[in-house]
Amino acid sequence: MSLLHFAPSHGWMNDPNGLIHWNGRHHLFFQYNPQSTRFENQHWGHASSVDLVSWVEHSVALAPGDEGRTDYDSDGCFSGCAVAVDGGVTLLYTGVHGSDQLPCLARSLDDDLLSFAKDPANPVITHRPGPDVEVFRDHSVWRDGTRWRQAIAGSRSGVGTAFTYTSSDLRRWQDPQVLIDGSGVAIPSGTWECPDVFSIGDTHALIVSVIQDELGLQPEVWWIAGAMSDGRLEPAAHGPVDVGNRLYGPQSYWSPDGRRLMFGWIRTHLDPASDGAPTLGAMSLPRQVRVVDGKLSVQPAEELRNARGSRDDFTLTHDGATTLTWDPRSAGELVLDAEAAASVDAITLHGSNRSMTIDYSLFPGPGALTIYWDAGIFEVFRSGKAGVWTDLALDEVEHVHIVHRPSIGRGATLWSLQRPGPQGPLSSRTAAIGTRARSAIGEAR
Image (cartoon, rainbow, N blue to C red; front, side):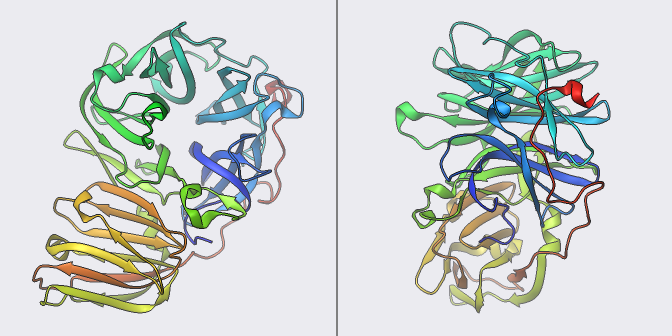
């Protein structure tokens, strides 16, 4: 089991949902099937943390059908977001009923976000924005002056599209229009999912996850950045959010100190070694997202430094290859300083009988290189780029072989990783307590 990558104790997990910092804790909701390790029967699971490293798992936040009391989400509570409003937290999610996938609300009933009430007005948008819209799901909500704006992803006439609506109260949504679609930017079209819209300075950014089933290609995650004009995003730059082959459906949110933090779903079910595991799916390490020169830049969250334990420093040799060796570790962080990273041609991490070679060509540019490994999950960061891979059978790393050009200086630093001490209590209830969503917001008022 991984040390720092959150996963529920059992069942299936996919997209992060409803990320929010509230009442002194980071709250992570997620797509969840508590009854099996299959993608079906989608609930919202819930975990929280004070430090982004140690997580407390809570009971289910949203359940499909609400024990027979709601039919509009009887076939699943799909992905969405959270906003703080009127002294509480409101979730906006996709309720699934047959072929209908429509926006729904739920309102927190307590300060610890352990229970939610579904809105009696659900679904708050009752139909897709046009007959040519094939897919319409997943949500991102932000404040635009005196109005709320909501982005919903999908496809229109086979083209990946993000739609927007406006509202004054989160319940009555109007003025549907296209925020941007695949015809306006050179990223894959297919079906767009999991929109995430935010602005940093004068730059607006949209993150979308793209499915291209008809082409037989793996899903991909892209960012698009530019200026907002009359409710449309005018793209100026774009690129992949992650250059690995496991990340999907990321979502970001604001921390109290003004950083934009992100988590994404690591698709461990694609790893053969996951067969028979009691849980499938893991969350990425927390990431910080910035805009640098008009482009999205991703790096590890500062809080990960709190997981560092013992430290070893190494110097790269001058003969073109260096092997860094230590006692087998299931979790660790290796940092090559900028000078050493600039001299590297290849990096391979070795266990007792398995190895993984990092595709170093995916991380060009200056700057230090950081590699995290955690029970078979590998995350790599350099120069604003990130990549996630898994080899769950490589659950301990014994040494790293680095092929490089002549290098001088310290070169490399290794930290063992450990989970910090116990977390503080929730404000009003124990972490183990939580109730299923009630059927009407009116019960909380």
